[in-house]
Image (tube, rainbow over all chains, first blue to last red; front, side, top):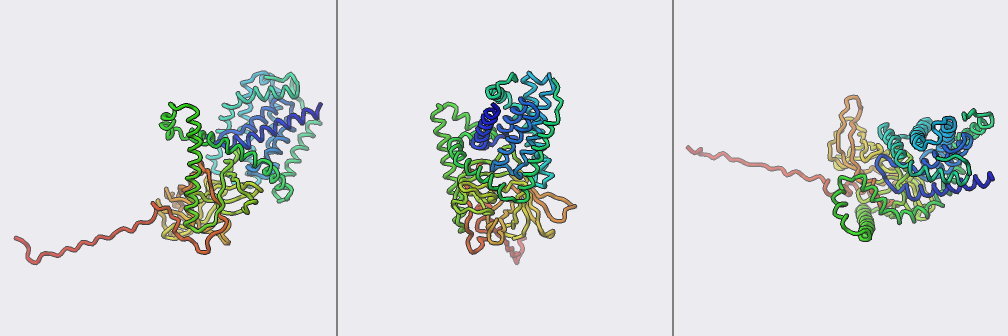
Length: 173
Length: 307
């Protein structure tokens, strides 16, 4: 049962990853655009338990680190997504008012996106990578958050349906 | 239901985080297994990206048009009346035509300079969630591309090859915050360093505090030893605004880059530079310094002033 769940989820993530790499990276949207893959990962983690959230962050981060367009060393996205995956699952698991309310989940995912990119930048700064001007960075981070707010309502129902199909749990929107 | 977090989950979390820190350390120390993994992933992804690019680039262009809505609104209005099939055809044709146009201009530039180039199509515009400015092109080590080769387009410098995969290469754009190139001003030959800013403008820092620069001055790449990463003479941009700063040791100016990095379709990678530096031959035509004619008026006072 566990192997089936893990392999099915990996397939789903792989599909979204390929979609992101081949289609969504071609589009230059104003304010930096959004990453479907990150939205997908964050909402998937939000529907899980904290341990599972961290494990999802680990797997999703490993895949994202393999992307030729990621700039940091291998392991940077992994680290960031483990922390955020755990945190978002923890927050949603602990708070009853957040569960079962789709709108608050949208805001949670958007906020998590801003936090994810900020942590990514901080880790990059600690590792001594060259970053842009603070205005450009802030624009990209906040732009991504706004795009996530706009896109997440369309992505979340699909994520929740897929998640239910694979895990057959009572978690839903 | 409140989540407590027992020892088991804490152990899992710590294990995962330590694993990722371990990987970061390995990669930063340059262990080749790590870069090999990324290489393999790119080899798998490149064909898919290429197919998606050919099917999707008209749509991608459409989205980049949306971000300049003011400019394209009239064009969109005139197209509105035509039916969907025709519109699709026009977009596809325009896409091809612009690629041909870009290819022609980049070959013109390379021909003038005597560069040996390999043409490549842009297959991906970099990652939307990352903070570096990169593009992916469809030529790689199979076409004998190597790291640190100069990449140009019809207008001028685009960037430098940062990583080479079998069928594709990652190009770091001039606008990347980590990008630095030595430049000289066409005409006066003063030298300086140009750094990317993440936008379509870059910052020029002159090396000599005595030298002066004015807006409209054209900057050319200065060339590196062995022509890598930069071949000499490639136009980079023109000075737009002088930034006055009394505290700075040398003069600083803002530079508008020649290449439009948001609408790159076809680029060329310089594989071999000519033996002789092309000097100022590549300065765009409208920027050629025009000699100012000196007018001398001779007036001879008349010997007998009229009364």
